[in-house]
Amino acid sequence: MILLMAGASDDGLATIRAEALKALLRTRGQYPPRLWWARRNRRTVATAMVIDSPGRSGILLHACPDSAGVEGEALAETVAAASRDALQYRGLAFVQAMFDPHQTAEMDMVQAGGFEFLAGLVNMKLELTTFTPSWQKAGLEWRRFGEFSEGQLADLIAATYDGSLDCPRLSGLRGMSDVLEAHKACGVFHPASWWMVVVEATPVGCVLVNDSVSGQTGEVVYLGVVAAHRRRGVARAMVRRAADDAYRRRRTALLLAVDEENHHAMRLYEEEGFRQTHRQWAFFMTAKMASRG
Image 1 (tube, rainbow, N blue to C red):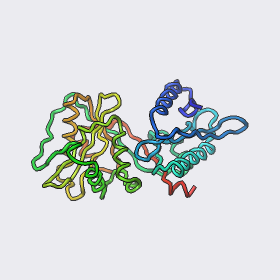
Image 2: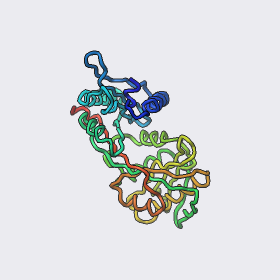
Image 3: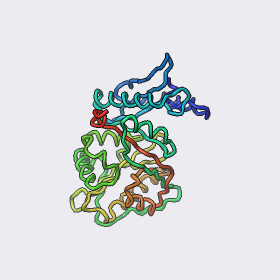
Image 4: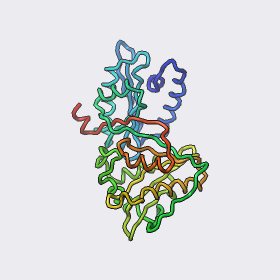
């Protein structure tokens, strides 16, 4: 079943996928994941599970629809059952699934199982080997994590959601303490690279950067500016500060993901030297969606 969950195929990657899946199962989730499967004539035709993540979210794993022996309709039903179980009985706020654009069979299958489209995500990368620091901007006060409370940061992030174009359908699904836990769990938490920007004693934006698991790159896990201070150069200054900090810590690159509908942010990142690496489509299911199934 591990091979089936990892996407058994003839491409020679099944063993690698299975090992990656087993590593994920060892390290993620507050509760042991429950494997759901469908059988026909004593033969397994579908498998799915949801792994809990910090911040009351879950990651959907499932058999590849194109794998030998997998039945598409049974797989959609199994995905729906596993997701409903996680949402209704394990208290998750939402379950998400990520796909590359060419994985049309997978996307059709999860939608048949009750998932809805969340966002198209553009993954971007800034090479830091030839980076030139230039983050200073007059009138901004910079505070590191520890110089503000988590409550202050939570209030600021909540304020930046107003009018945000980054995955707006997730807004309000979780409490801010859950949101902070999720941000901390992205890669390796590096509090010295979590910054709050203050203008005239008022917090106006924040940029949160963690390290990758390998430690070679940094990742912007959140960047936001309150509506009243947008289009004033605050976001650009935070991007540059994040890049400068990663550069000084000898990281080779700075990574981020942005909603493809957030055209202003994408343009800013491109102007600052970020280049697109790949795209992913995100789907999600909430308890309300699950109750309609």
